Length: 91
Image (tube, rainbow, N blue to C red; front, side):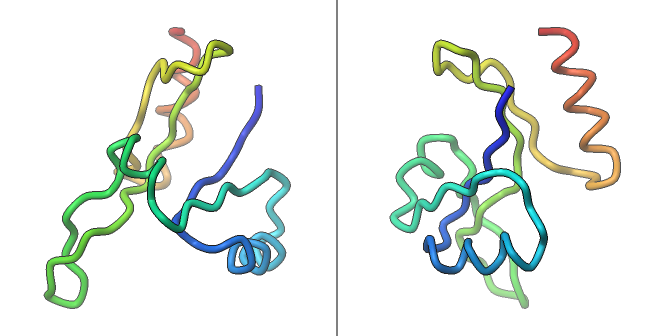
């Protein structure tokens, strides 16, 4: 199994974030939002009282064939890992 992060940030911004957070997995840069749009994680959000398009945090299980097998939007950040692990166990 492999773990990747994906964001609309640039490679340089991701490098700084990865170092600051001590992440041990690769981050994929999608500044033009092509993959984020394809995954359906760009949605309307409200920030500081204004409607904006933002990235919804989510976890995707992708099979060896490259097909998305399951997806989980992050609701409760504390419960999310258990939800994903339980879902992976059913695959």
